[in-house]
Image (cartoon, rainbow, N blue to C red):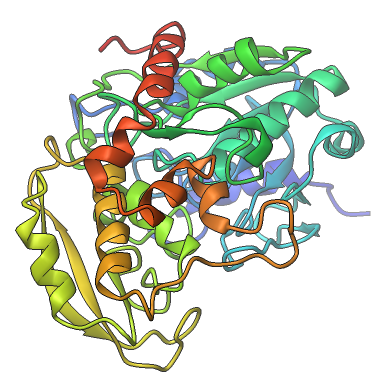
Length: 425
């Protein structure tokens, strides 16, 4: 009988053999640039995985769980003798990122590492706790790049995983990453309980201005009846006023329609167009920056530029989406250009855009209506957290007046948020 080699030994040998060749499993062989920010996973690895030593570990991640040399943390950990990685948990779009919006990859064995990949998308409570138990892990790690908007679902995957870890008696470790649109402040309306869904489980603002590690602390302390055993591996060198480009980290698309950092900056506002019959740019190369509909003409761009909104300009644009709303139909509209990120308020800008479109095109504009949810039929209410934004716009209010309607709850949330910040503002 020949010599037996374990999967871990083979992977470890392969990783060493191909280091620097650009083939096979990537390694940590190329040192990062001096002075560059260190993510939570880098801090964990630099400490030789001491935090999870002697434990069976699973990780909730996706293609954004990368290292400075563009290698994926799962590939590197699977090849390491210093950590016992036994499972991967995939969110919406999947671990390797093969699924479109509203989809996942199902259960499978990852061919590159041989690890089982469990599908956690839309799983919560005891069902998700059962998945964690069956996987055999002692500790669940979370490492996904967020984009800073409440309705971007990865933070709710983290929330559900925290809750399920507590139910299953598992430890939960967040490997922190930057908020790419900065952590200066919170913007927008607050989610209210009657409108809680997977695009907003709890009462946080539409643009939260927090890292996933800070959000995990808030979720665990404020929203879970049974808190998990939580630890956050903090970044080194992140400052809350940093834009993503200033971190020195490579941008990996967190989802198929989040191609650039520019997309992330506008998304907390233009993501609200998912609650209307205008295209939010899905099916174009500039999703959430190109907004329009077949009934829109040049007047919308002119009216928006006349508002002189801080930090943003609008260009008349025509585009034809290849899928999603108005697929294969020519749309008139605008391209959104952020000219000053510090002055730009994404949520107020999105409200101004919707209010102006509704005023200019009363015969074309419509709210997206969800016939499967007759108690909460307007999708915009689920995105914004209550009917307030929709009813104010329907009443003819401008963006300043709509913003005044959420000012009080936002101030209350800002005080709660302050208690759980890690990186001081």
